Image 1 (cartoon, chains in turn cyan, blue):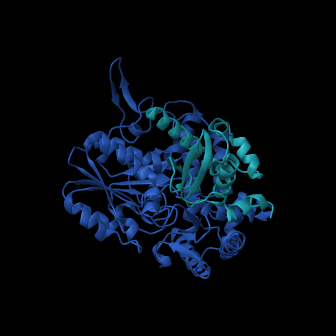
Image 2 (image 1 turned 45 degrees about the horizontal axis):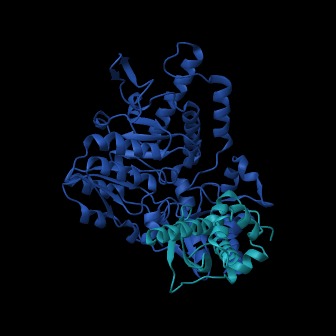
Image 3 (image 1 turned 90 degrees about the horizontal axis):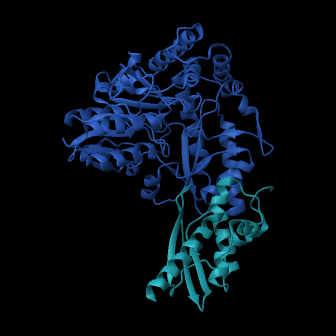
Length: 129
Length: 408
């Protein structure tokens, strides 16, 4: 089928990485897709300035699930500074499919969640100092 | 009876191929396609009659004014409105409903007053009321139409009624469940407590015979583009006398009598509510759409859609994991069916259907509170019209099965 549901995306949809709930998360966020009202929650644990663990959960479409899986996989172990540099274009490249404008929103939802997570984590750190 | 195969020939866009397949257009609740008669009316207007209305002495302005006012008469007659002066042209239902909320609501609502709407409303009949409630101190209450599976909302409204309720605003037909509300009975109850009734007819006027007189309501909003007309044109009917209790929400040219440095006197109704150059071509196109619908006949369209409902409900019921939202009785819904498929997200389903040339809508259809109450994030909606066939429904069912095979 000549559309977006190709191997890479389907693999991550069927067997998503880092999906589930973390018991010892330091921060968590919820982001919603205004197109469909989907909720995506994401949790983060940082150790020594690096992303020690990151997990996502939520009922979402195949594009959002695959994108969340690929994103969390890609940034695990990276420093916060590196994770912050992740762009939408890089994420779309990881997905490896051409998306229409509305589906780009599905794909970028986890990136928005990630940015919010880091922002929240850094604010929390600052207030604790 | 109408023959959709013959009607289809009037709609040039329905000849298109989408992703290599003949287009199966099932997103009519979002917007309908346009017959060549409507497109021709638009071209003819711009090629032969284009001018600004009302203020010109020259021939073209006279012609344009005549066409615009004839359109008002034609749309009025279609909705059962005796006096075209009671009909304001708007950009669509959203503007019409905003006009009621801000034009009537801001002026007439006080603290302690209650605005009653359903929890199944399109955002356009909810959000304006949220803002008006906030500005006036009136209370916005929602009655749980989401729980009335068969569309019987009257008992739910009765429970909420008191003399504090000043207006009930509800859709005659839901854009998600398709459920048809018994507006006449709602009006009967509303009258007992002296509340006005505002009806969002965006999803009903294209599919059912509408007669505002027999409905007995006070406001009725429609969109032209959902009933074969162009986008950007709609109407608001206001019961005689009520316009005097409303303020315009826009001010400027065309809606005044005399203007001085510091003040102005307003034009008569309905011009008072149509500031600026109106959508003349849109009104002309809307009128041509009304002609087309009248020629086919509302009753024929209704019967055709009940048949399609029957067909869709029975085809979809054979698909495992699929559950239909809304009334089980095909005669209790307009021409649409929304559903969820277990383990298959609405966006994914819509994308796979699109690859087969089938256009459906996925998401919350601008009714997020309803989806929240139904405990689903998104649904898929197939909505039909006079040109859809039983084959379209069959292709839809096959497409859903294919999506389940691929992603389920």
